[in-house]
Image (tube, rainbow, N blue to C red; front, side, top):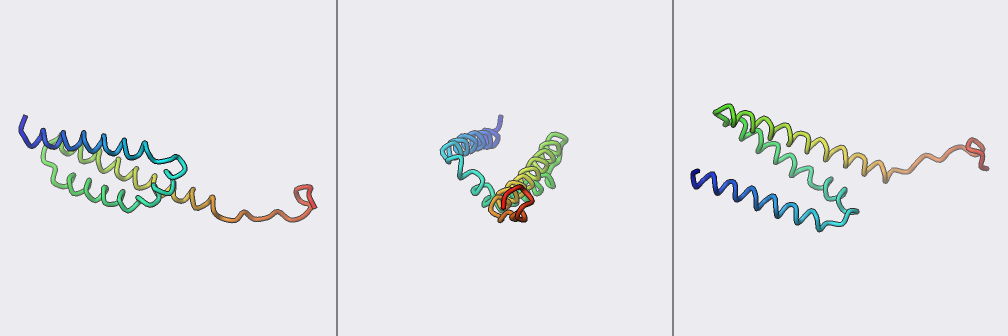
Length: 104
């Protein structure tokens, strides 16, 4: 194994550990607002995945690049879906006409 590969693996493991620790400390009520605020970061991840996939040479690199693009795309779409659902919760509900639901 080359030193570069060991550095990449070490960086990946440390990033995964730090990410897990940071997210696990966030209260449940804040997950939705934080996810909606991170849609721009998801877009940057998608751009990075596309850049890496564009430079892929071998079949393994092409496969991993394609997988990165697919997962980043799902991440972006999921962020916008959650944001849309969150914003729907804050919209005023239309009031029903008097007498229609049995109340006056």
